[in-house]
Length: 418
Image (cartoon, helix red, strand yellow):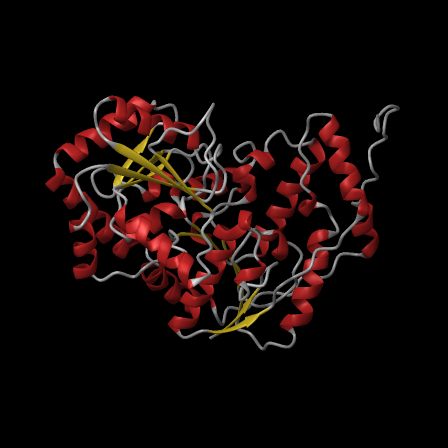
């Protein structure tokens, strides 16, 4: 099977990825590796380029002044520009299937007879008023976002999402038939692939004290850093010696950081030294603490479970699909207090043999449900079934109809530039 792999970024050049997109782009890279290891030949169509239109900057400023968010990728000229690039490159590939591992926008206007697959964590529509950059959207962006995504979904033969939450949201938003959906959790972006004897040894060498909580995230606020700090503080106040290891960002607090906080900053896992440091921290942590405010899946949970590290996290977005109580940690209500987290952690650590069993169970859950090997087993037969289905070629819409969608910039009121 030959798969045309459409990405807006260069999936093979990790050094070119911005930090804020490491999770998304890393997943795209792993999906490519999964397909190749299953026997697929990939034709990489990316990086696709987005047209730079000066009016988008003006619109962003205009709506910002009015307390609204604006999202330029759903402007009417974006999807057709992607489509032209994809179609031109498709013609040179002789591919059997077209797959996009990010959001739906690149597929929205593609005209092809090939089976088409969107493999993402959640639809953009599900993130409206959930993720900060898609909260409080202006009316034109909100309408265009749903219009573009609906067009893409109609062209897709399969939509692969990572959680029950994402699937339910997709069906509610777009009346998407369940038969078109598949739920396949994502594995760790760079898992250690420990064998059972290796993970047993890693778990056995963790000391009873201090309790080490690992926080992973580049966004301290959105990932719940302040609550993680409060949990560690609560445990220490209860007489349970605890350290909070922070990776990916600089922790923030009023005044000096407490001595129990160990900041490691951003670790570049693309380097051997960075990967070794990350693996060392992960192996020696007792829990991943992930009280995030908004997340579609939480690939950090897969990362942690791959090293036999249980997780405590907020039950938001798709996390309840990934995190099972008594199996690989516990998901807490979004309004849970630091005391709630601390009480669970303290009770688990008090029975250290029980903690070690939970750590082993976390690794087993990863292998069976959250690894890329498990994802490959679920997706490969499904993609093979799609290949060979005939799809009618859609006529190109008249250029006049496309241009009619380009609304002018809203009238700027006097004083806008003040």
